[in-house]
Image (tube, rainbow, N blue to C red; front, side, top):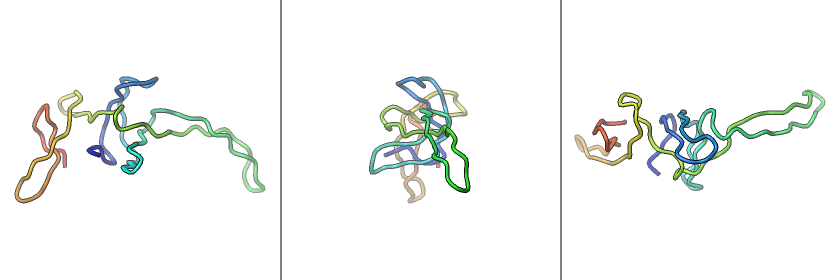
Length: 101
């Protein structure tokens, strides 16, 4: 999986198509990511002795195939490749050739 935590991504399909956001959590085993402000789901929290009942809104997971890395400097989506620099493997944006990390 080429998308990692704290990457900025753009949504390619679904109800949130076109939105951009930061990856809050990457789940490589499930091939999913959680993106900030995207795929908002409603959870009903039961009342306990310490807390009142409430309706919580939180982000749900999205398949990695539905997101793409968003290069903030070039203001466009780009695929990610790998390159070896100084004996270290780094991620590279294919469209602009800039090193991501």
